[in-house]
Length: 66
Image 1: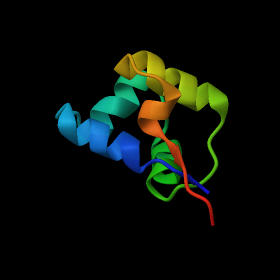
Image 2: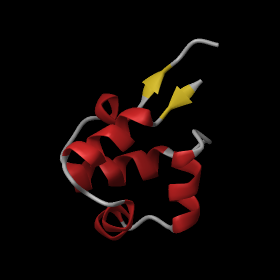
Image 3: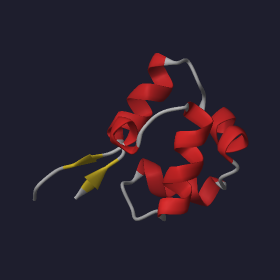
């Protein structure tokens, strides 16, 4: 399972609100909801978030064996 918990922690550490991330990365509220519930998002979304936050994919997601 892929978890986006590291993304949420990164937002807290950088004091960035989810609404701000949506504007910075150009992602929809539906996509943000998917990230909150660890649902599938495309690599294009991951790319946009990494560009907006100047980070690597490993900084915003983690693999958790089931």
